[in-house]
Length: 218
Length: 218
Image 1 (cartoon, rainbow over the protein chains, first blue to last red):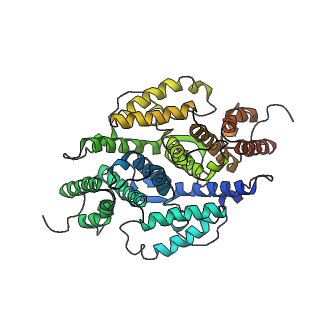
Image 2 (cartoon, each protein chain N blue to C red):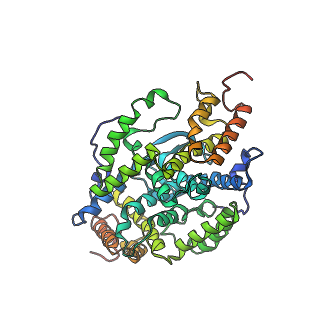
């Protein structure tokens, strides 16, 4: 993904008419811009169709998981706020692109690229809302609250479900072993003991069935 | 969309391993099943790509709108609960299909089809969660609370934004006039005076530019 800063917002292609309240115009400009999240492709294969998932679909799916799985959190979490964390957690990828979980080289400058993207994207909003979304994104990245830890756990559990359904999926990425998967997914255990147990069960069973590469000969 | 009841859940294609907690198994079965929402196509064209939007992308977009536009609600709304309403509002379309806003014939048996779909889909969940999601869906449909009225307003405002950006979009549906658009969108005014004013402004301007059909010669 290119990193040409200060792109022209999509909304400029068909500018809103004169006479809209300025604050609302900024909000609508941002809401049109984030349509782009629907075009950021992830590695994960859908269960229901033969294509990759995009970030908007992924974010919606995580939000549904929060609503239904919050009871498994080891610490109490406020569902509404946790949902907001997952809704915004991938927005920066609109400008910074998706960084595959098992791509270590792309991960190197990921933080810097995403921080630049956040400045630009959230900068379309009125200042107070730009700060609010930035704070949500920072909270998610830092996992400094029970809500952020649970949101992150959903972000790791959802592709695990998709990989299970695909009988491998990105577990089959060249060079990746079942132990790599365990290591990347262990963050689920920071939020939920029971979900991490279930996740490990799926990873173990997937390895036993040959859907991922064993680290040591069995 | 066919209406063959009691379909085989997607999760049965790769059953979860033995030993998962039964409640969690039901939750994961439902969460895999709703992957289908990513394949339910709507009429609205994306801003960022030359294709139609799907229901999962649409639901995520509405949730973002709630987070940023809730301040425009005429009555105070709880953001977290309003977000949950939009996350689940289209789930029944997984089995009942999308009913285009300007398709009056398809709208006739819509309610019955969707109620059957709700029974079947939510029935995959543990009983307490099935009841909770059904209650959220009913609340949205009945617009009985400020949250539901605002959620519904977002459901009508979002395609209006996409149509504006497409310089017509579904406003150009054969037989549909600008007054039809105004009538279908007026529900926005039940939730937010300022957003409905802005919506009317976009519809008026679109009509003036020839992006929709005028009811009376100008």
